[in-house]
Image (tube, rainbow, N blue to C red):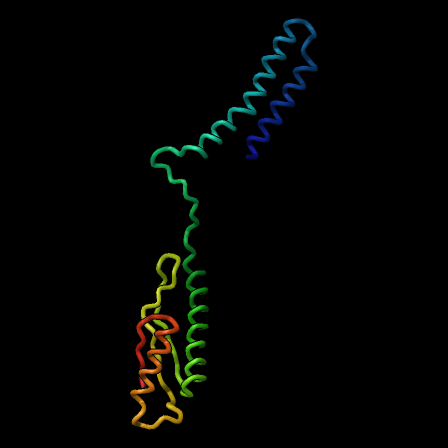
Length: 157
């Protein structure tokens, strides 16, 4: 765009200088007319190619403007997001069931998405539940976490 503006300004300045230097005879008017036509061409020709490029891209030409994936940034952002989800699982299970847990999400970066493969919940403290109720608590943990994220849940004691 800068080149286009400079070429239009250059053509206008050249036309003005030529108009000052040319004599007022018929030859001067003829040369001045040719210079004005050249100025007009300098202004119009790039616009037609610009408009034609927008309207009909050439065959096989990639018109998408994709930025390359910044993997380090994506890893950091999704790591923070996963840590927040893990903390949310821990807080919800403690609030609803009264048990102490440690949650971990197994995930990987796929293109622009965080693909969660599995959620691992380790029960550290069963709280008020006795030995007979452990299986019941584990099933409750699985159902709550599955309802939250819809992923495979593995519970460790």
